[in-house]
Image (cartoon, rainbow, N blue to C red; front, side):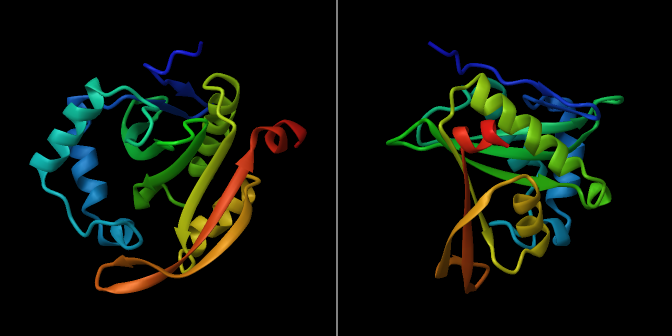
Length: 185
């Protein structure tokens, strides 16, 4: 049986790891950037909310069915946190995992999110025995749409007026990737 108690993924430039309290200033900074938060479910977040999130994630078990788990994304050379990736194992099918991602604006356009996603996918499929990975994004989030397509995910659906966020309904795309699709690439 695969242990799901710890996730650490290293890439040439990044480390995906559990959060630590030292990550608090960086988490507060990028989560309060209006451009970073634009397509997210939050507008701003307090330092106390971030501290509670870090404390919760430092003791949480990753990949627990029906719950979200946030991984810190840190630069490999300095361990500076530049974002976070969310993982949500489906409550009724824990071999299906939804991924979400947030990256500090300073690091957009450098290929870091792509690098992190590709290595995370490899880990999820090979180590965590994930069968299917999904991602959902606002159709207007062109950066995320392009990223999901660059990492080989296929668009499965276009959901009209499917999510109420920040005072309006938005359309969403759902992307997916099966383990056998990943292995065949």
